[in-house]
Length: 149
Length: 149
Length: 149
Image (tube, rainbow over all chains, first blue to last red; front, top):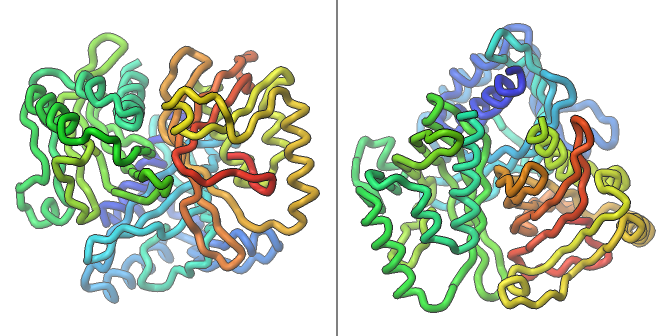
């Protein structure tokens, strides 16, 4: 059961972002959560400096709010394709991802590849996110305008 | 059991297309089926106009037949990489996909990204497709020469 | 149980390569194993000539050793995104993959797409690889410098 709950959670993670349901994406997290985006290079060199750091759910909410205010026109759409899950424990997984963006002209491009490290809390037959660390391979630096990866 | 049947079906969907076994791909559908390809833009704007519409299995068969007649030489090969499944019900799923094409010179390119919305019929330990709607992010318009997405 | 063991194995296959844990990747194989990379064109034409052939685990070890000696500086990082599994039997699977490489300048590119054909041995709740055939769509020829696909 718990593996299915985790699989459902990972599917929701990507699909809600792709649907531009960012507020619903935030609801996949528990209140006392952590969301980090960090480059692979920094991880390899032991440099803790992340590209994005949200230390609780309110910070995540703020980030989405800011994005909504700045980004009046949807500049791109996202497609996340996530690979098979490594279960480090029943509720901790790792998985690689590819993220494609399509611009207003209809051109799709590879935007980011890397890996998710997720820790979840299992509540009955569903799961919510306790922490997500996204280790990005690419130097593409997410800005305020960027949607979460 | 039913989730495994659906996972098997989705795997077959992509792999049979990639193997150029288009006639066997059609056999994944029930007779009274529907296959639609529509752009994400049209879905967002509530425009029902699809890029491709097959309203039953005979229309799908005709489409593949036409493709085989026109396309004497295989101009490209496909690779579908499909992401994790969102189960909307035991037999209804959504999943994002990336589709790459490789031409005769051996160059692989991103061809299309988007999302599948599939409804299946579960028959014992296997499943068949009742309807597939492919929501494509890209402006790449499938033509008669195109293989199914 | 056995399907989960195979899924775990496939996830480890990609993630260990992406982590540059090549020696640990070799440990996913049994001693009497086979690892082949062959082009889709050669498979279609019935030409058995592979691009890479390791006929047992020692040959795999040698290949990784040579790679480590030649490649003092890590020239790229890999991200494998593997699609859903077709179970040909409880221990034999096929799956499509996309492989992205990121260079030192931080640019990520599609490097190879194709398909895995894997045969595994199930040992309790885990599985190990008996044979892997990678059918690559792209003409990109893996060299001594290349990491496994």
